[in-house]
Amino acid sequence: MSRAGYERLPMHTVPESGSPRSRSRSRSRSHSHRLSSTCLRPRTFITLLKIAVPLTLLVIFGIFYLYEPHVEIAFYPREWIHREIDPVGRLAGCFDEGRISPSYNASKYLEGPKKTEVHAGMGMRLGMDCYEFAATIPPPKNMDSGPYLPPDERTQYHTYWRVDLAPFSERQEWMLKSFFATQDHTTSRLIMWSNGDLSTNPILALYANMYPNSFVMRVVDTPDLATGTALEGSSLLKTDDKKAWTDGDLVRLLVIWNYGGVWIDMDSLLTRDLSPLLEHEFVTQWDCYDKIYQPLNGALMHFQKHSPYLCEAFHIMATSAPPRADSTDWGALLYLKLWRRLLGGHIPPFKILPFCFSDARSCRLDNRLPDPFDGDGGKEARWWRSKKDGLQEGGELDSALGSVFAVHLHNQWEKTFPKGGWVDRLLLNRYEEKLSKREGVDDL
Image (cartoon, rainbow, N blue to C red; front, side, top):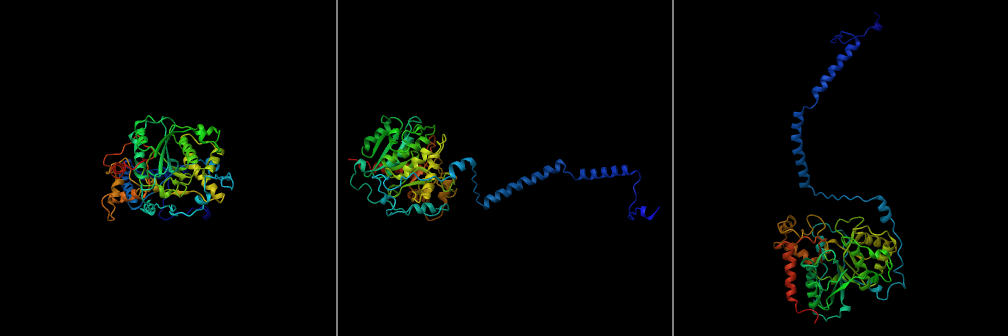
């Protein structure tokens, strides 16, 4: 054999016998045997699983113990964003000289000096920052000691109840009690609007008799209220939904346009006199999380009669797509659109009250108000009681409630306040006590 045809093998290698095909098959079987010997057996897999699952749970528990996760996921259709959010339309000219109503003092409301500040310049998510900021706004002096103003000269407060949703009962009465226990009877008046006659309701009839100049009931006539606005004659005036959201949002804007004053949602409990806020026109922050597309809320709002802000709002409503059924398009998105248009037109925008002023239930776990419908045994209520700052038990929560202006309950009409819970102790009982002391201070 020639040297070129000779295949030299390592000294320790012994050539296999048989044909090349059989040798290849033999190596293949040997390789397959080695692979099968390395695969996990069922018993081994179960053993590893028993180790991995507790270890994974331990790691997750450690992450939650050492870190504070904040997760909020929302999906918005891109087509909706491009249509409703991205475009910043032009103002309708409601702020132009000559178009502002004579009943609206622009030099006072838009440019005049203010005694209080409601913009902190930061989100105030941390600790008690928002509550401490609310405490910088001093209460009014000499409550119920001034001269009695005629009803039309008083600050008008408005609320709304749909008679077809549920009967007006003791649960709804707490909003009225909170109003008459915290607001000045001599300078304020609450108007209860509805889509039907409530005068025969025994609870409301009692308040109308007790406070003849501070409480009145009226039936909403939306076509009449819309006269002279961009919504006059619009089919949008027939807007209606099962939750009373869109029609409630429409009513609040039309009512304040015609009468001026403060809107208070019926599912709110007032905690202090609102009058120090009323040198500003404002809506409220939805919560402390700065929702990019729905950051604002009209559950508590204030505008002057014939305010050009509302004039512009009606123009947006009349020229935009109708609100989606059972949506907050008019209760949240509308105010964002208006705010951005005001900036685009170089008009000073309305103020935005920080979240805790009226909606302190919606923030971090460690600084939001406890669930109003849980007893003091709830973990959030226990956190407020456990704070170590020299105050008595529950004193921190009491102090916070004395600083903010309202607690928004977000409907939940089917729930009741537990006896002895923080709402019962720190709000409801105090309303009763205050009202008993103020029985003689009404509309004589």
